[in-house]
Image (cartoon, rainbow, N blue to C red):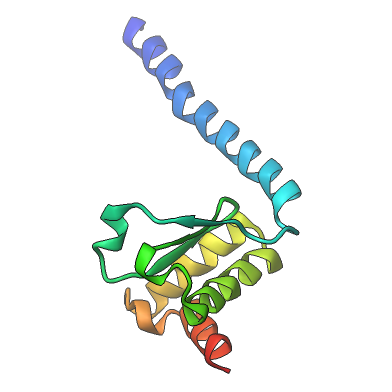
Length: 122
């Protein structure tokens, strides 16, 4: 009986954390979704990967130093920001992950990446 009560109390920690996280993300969306994104320099460990930039709604767009002024990459990431604005943080991440799963975890064929590439090059 004592272990059962302890388990129930510890179970509340991730539940409360998740509720607070959802509330903060929802609140951030309310204030930041309609704004232009902020551009930040991406951390070095990210820049050592094959990627040049990443959009992380509602925080902003992170670009590697070598590509910070690359207009094509900025435009591509701004398309991702528009995708976020059409939905929300939850919608953006859910659509991105679902698109990634649907195409067999292929980054290039993710429908959101395809849209961003097409709009950035036109």
